[in-house]
Image 1 (cartoon, rainbow, N blue to C red):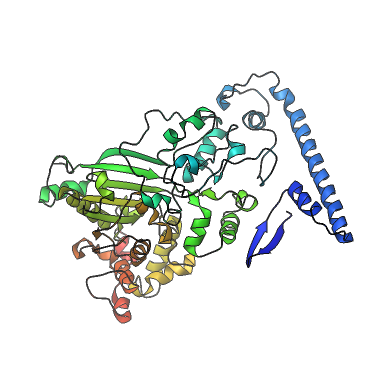
Image 2 (cartoon, rainbow, N blue to C red):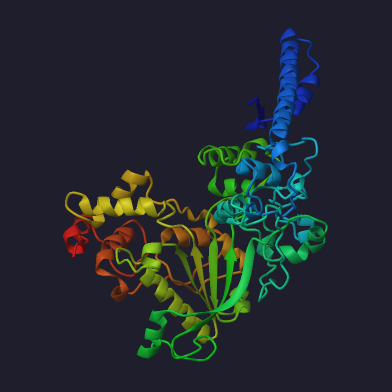
Length: 516
């Protein structure tokens, strides 16, 4: 691939132009040097070869599939199940669902490519512009974002299209899907430094940009807001034990059902802001995202003009206890827990960590805060196993249990670093964005001991008045290794911090205790 490397204002920029843009650049140069002339000849030859090759591939593809599809009438939304006797069925259907030419990437200034302007941080959403990531025929040349809608679930959508369960040109009908309560706008929405990983207008997109959608543009929401009841065995137990009172509003019945308002958020990254948040150059961020995902998104390299990226990662769930309007009201007390996913504990009750007990404690305290006239918020991030993944986490569990001396607090982080190379990849730098999206101005009670979360939130301009550790009686015996190691590494505690010698004596279960 051809590229130009240019130094400008003491910063490096890597450009990957099309043949046309490179040719234009060179022809604008006034030098008559022989080398330049040779380069021009070479580029012209490459350009012509590229055009000829593309035409030959197109002609070969058209000829190959003419017989297979000539006698079949295909509707714009045909399913694979509707076509069964075409010989090479998969190839024929690929031709019917997609253009013959595969568009691997695009370039700035390319013929026909005209992205809709997107001005991150603009107050007026119409002036800001919609986030358009669709490759729908009416939108593909107007895309102003890299990636695909749906976060990590975009892969399943592609599979559904491939097997014929979903028409490739399906357009969602967003009638009656509007939010059940209002969020924003808040001043933090218009500060490009406050929110760089969420589209603050994501829940309003279908209504704000209805005219554009009606005219054929495929704009989709990246945030959804609804209401529900939450049923958990621990809440029923708290009611029975008298820790939670049934009030009919927050705790709605004797079973301990909780009334909640909730939102789901898909990540939308403003790349210049994300890079600045991590203290790196945007070009380095783009290169890493391209290289270390197997080259999944070439436009990260070829389209430096596109500043927004929809990464294929897990999103965020938000649960609000009490009046949602109170979340942004600094006169009301707010209890918050920011929780990172732990499937083993949160869902299946594994006792090797404190994740589920702390989450349950946070939910109960949020409900109590709402009953006292304040509001509670649980923010749940899909960052399984400290964003290392569940496979890595289980490998670490095995190494911890099998290491010489057993599973001790002194070696808690060592085993993770040996396998993953780093002890934590949650990188809380982007975490406060969702709090700014909610309009949170202060946190009265923070149900977390994490120093990284605390520092990220406070560093973003939101004060935390009180930090609340998990009660000792809620810590499972086998998770003492985890909690004591974390406290020794800097986690908040109202108790004592163990010495290295004391950490070596904190030991979890051996394999013999697990094999029954």
